[in-house]
Each structure stands twice: as structure tokens, then as C-alpha cells.
Amino acid sequence: MNISKETESKVRLLLQQNRKVEAVKLVYDTARCGLKEAKDYVDQLQLPTKNTSSYKPGNIDDTILSLLAENKKIYAVKYYREQTGKSLAESLAYVDGLPQSRKQGTGTATMSTEIDKIIQQQELSSGSRQKQGNSFLKLCIVLLVAALMIYFIFFR
Image (cartoon, one colour):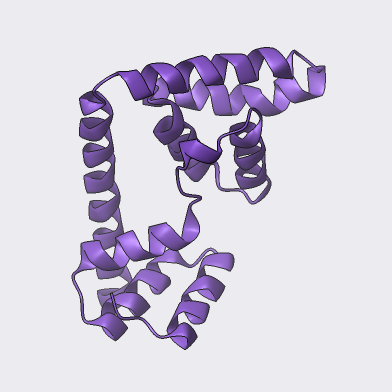
């Protein structure tokens, strides 16, 4: 996708202001691409990318906690789910319990070991279940963004 540095900085600014729909619209208008491509581009700027080769115990938890600190719980759940292959309910429960477990001082090493095991299992498995789940989630997000764009364009 051909996006200028100036447009990319405007998109990042909109994301910092929690104005994702406007960021997607800016990319959509500027790059003259499809809505899905624009949304994927914005998501790529917004979410940390999966890189298991540089995985170190605690990085997932630190990333989740930083997303929670920015009031981005949905992205924290999505990030944990992509990293571990867990279900949405399991990911939500983990993200909800993480700040509490850190406050109580429960074994961070134990959590990191558990995450290591999950990632190893995920790398060994085919991953088709995760791909299907991710496709469904992406479809839902695209539909939500489209509905929001229609709302902002026609009803404002």
C-alpha cells in the first residue's frame, strides 16, 4: 500500500486519540484501496505484531498490561489470543485476571512457563482453528467499522 509518511503520521495521531474509524477513512481515501485493506493497515499500525522468535517470558504480559493502561482491553484480548491460540473466553479471563494476579504477586514465573507451553503447543499444531477464529473476528470488526463509517458519513 502506498501511504506517505505524512499520512501515516496523521493516522498514528488519530489512533492515539482513539479515532480509529477516522484513521481507516483517511487511509481509505488517501490510498484509494478497499475498506478491508485500509482497516488492516490501521490495525497493523495499532497492534504489536506477533514475533515468536523474539519471545521472552513476560513480554506478552507486559504488552497486555501496556494495552490495558491505554484502555485498549479489546486489543489486549486479541493480542493474547493471537499469541496463544486460546479461545475468546479463555483470553478474556486471562486478560481480566492479569492485573489482579500482578497485584497479588502470584507466580509470574509460573504464568510465563504456562505461556511458553501454550506457544510451543501452538507452534506444533496446525493452527487451522486459530485461523478460522481470526477470520471470523476480522469479519466482525470489518462489519463494525463499516457500520460506524456509514453512521458517521450519513447521520452526522
